[in-house]
Image (cartoon, rainbow, N blue to C red):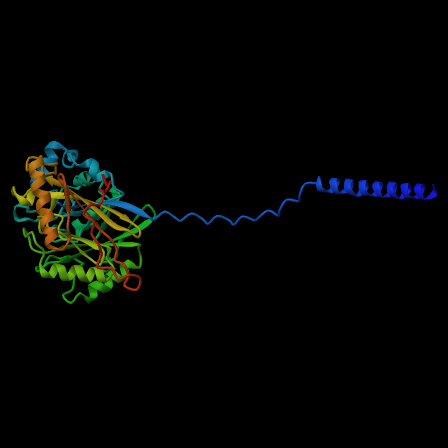
Length: 387
């Protein structure tokens, strides 16, 4: 009996102990598992900055004397660029060659091509949204130095920048600087003609001084536009000298070369990713009918790292208004086909789409990073919204 009682006691103690331990185990297992330590998220990298870009329109010679002056008197300054005003005003920068002084006094013999337009001719430039003109040409000094200074007064009062001359002759090679969407664009104007014309920025025969001037100008801007009065009048193909000067300009830092003086369109060339508009032709003039009065508006869009997209829009200058209009379809097709052929002869294929021409001139890829061929041209490039 005593052993039985002892056995029951031991059994009871074991049962209680087992229940206690089991209960504690149940209580322990019922607790939620500790959460794993939270991972620290890496900060997101900053977004890549958008590449800088701007749009530009380049056109040819604007001469406001002679018959053009009479059209301004009879029809008003707003009549000259009325038909293409939207295209010109739509760009960040609009550029032209001003082929005459704007002054009230000085030599004047328009029948002998000694030009001096009335100062109110500046209103034509303002109406067209012209931002920059080059005065590096063979007519800037037609009416003398005092008329030139009056021209500068009129341009400055109108807020139009100029290159190719300066109030102090020793500063004529300095670039005029224009800001467009955060890009500082410098414009330098020079002449390279075989005859004497009094200009202050004549290109030297050896091109060494010319190259040095451009290198100095490039240090002051992000992009350098070099505009040159060169070549032979009424010739549709650039001379070997033009090609040589263009090469020197590019190698000295030019990002765009724009030519004037032939009074007719020449082709678009390229070197090392730099477009070369050998001649933009006439734009406001009173010359004889034909190719001299057929020209184009060049829309140029530059994007950092991507180069230039160029859209060429044909225009015609009827003598009845002396300002450009958009020609009817067949004439427009003739103009753009001729421009495309001239460009193709210079190694730049132009895609003709309807009555417009389009081309992309991309920057060259350094040989150290790729074995690519020279700058590519994309004839299927999308159009440029310059206007």
